[in-house]
Amino acid sequence: QVQLVESGGGLVQPGGSLRLSCVVSEFTFSSYWIYWLRQAPGKGLEWISSINNGMGSTWYADSVKGRFTMSRDNAKSTAYLQMNSLKSEDTAVYYCALAGSRVRADVLANPRRADFGAWGQGTQVTVSS
Image 1 (cartoon, helix red, strand yellow):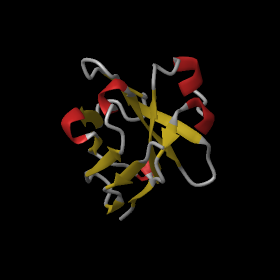
Image 2 (cartoon, rainbow, N blue to C red; image 1 turned 90 degrees about the vertical axis):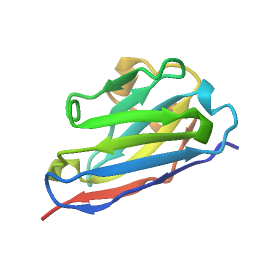
Image 3 (cartoon, rainbow, N blue to C red; image 1 turned 90 degrees about the horizontal axis):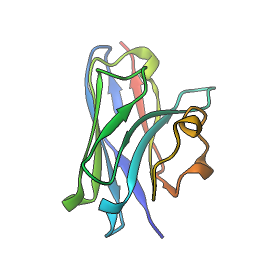
Image 4 (cartoon, rainbow, N blue to C red; image 1 turned 60 degrees about the vertical axis):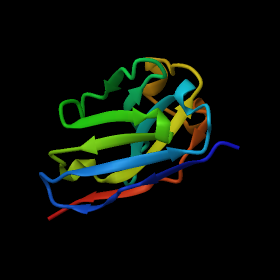
């Protein structure tokens, strides 16, 4: 069974940065699309970024575009999310997930766990002074 393990969360002041990592226990990691999602207290899941299984093209939600950067290292079976200029509204549990093919944009607008092949346990990010 594929396992995903996120790390790198923590407490950071507004304007600060964090780098999240997602290690995937799957030797065919390079064949998967990887996604980052988050869930703020009392709110539903929010898709924030995707990276494809080919050239490493990325997509971002408007809420994080220009501040967050997603990347992957296939040799390490790891995906990353570099988060800069963090705001209090970025406070959430951050999850990585994978899928064998592209998840449609209309699905990402209202994502559910069942839309992805596997999920990590999440890592807490708190942005506060």
